[in-house]
Length: 337
Image 1 (cartoon, one colour):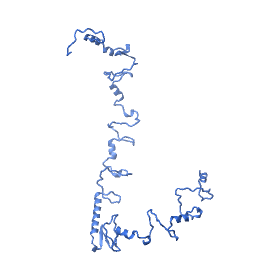
Image 2 (cartoon, rainbow, N blue to C red; image 1 turned 120 degrees about the horizontal axis):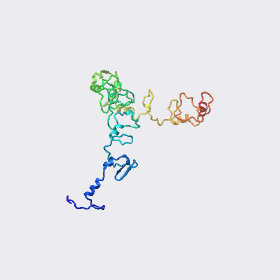
Image 3 (tube, helix red, strand yellow; image 1 turned 90 degrees about the vertical axis):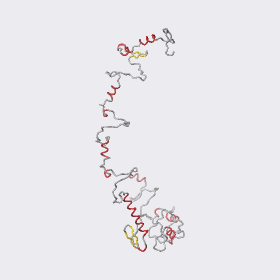
Image 4 (tube, helix red, strand yellow; image 1 turned 120 degrees about the vertical axis):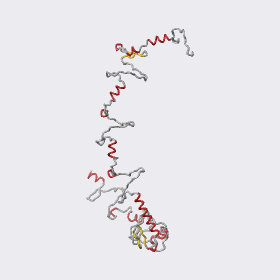
């Protein structure tokens, strides 16, 4: 129509007829919202879109629209405005002790609790001032903190201003360690560079003359040691192994031990049957002499110490007849249980 009118249009009579402005204006003028808003309670009804709402028996669907301009409620069944609702249930006069105790964790959604009083009992929440004063005060020293019961992780931080250690269990400073290492290096250099003509070695200001003072290697090695050529020379490992642990060396060629010999959980194999009372027994001889299946307990020498059953039972034990007899379970149960 390019912004032109249709004029001279007849009043519509069928649903498909085009409507005139006069017809539409007459319909709109018949709708009076003021009548609905200001209606008296006498008719007990509101009419909206031809749906009758009587005595609240039919829900009113607001279709996501608001009710605005709502007056303050004066009775319990009146609708509340947001302002009235907030003032009744979330008033600043409402205190936390008037709210039911939570049955689960309470999230503050990254908000703070402010104006928190100082804690007076162990279960009270701490405010920052109290926490800082109790645990992070600059006057708090390590000797006021309980002794650690496990390893302490410093998270790659340093311990600074550490005093020079005086006891074996004191923490050592870098300066102390460096001085000890420097002293060791100096002493080693003195030993290495010592001349034979002086007939002495000096370590830590202790004079070692003609072997009269032991040299404490402090668990360190002597390396680069030449092969021994005289009886008093120190042996290197190669020389020692070749002289004393050669595969051709037999036990009867080694000096008799002056103390117990530990086999470090290894066996002695190929042991001959004993012929004298001090000979070592091989297993076969031991089993045949002392552990024969026909040997009775009363044929074995009385024990001179406690006997371990190695978690095995004594079975078929007769009833005790004297005070020193062992009790079987039946006798024990009947006497004590």
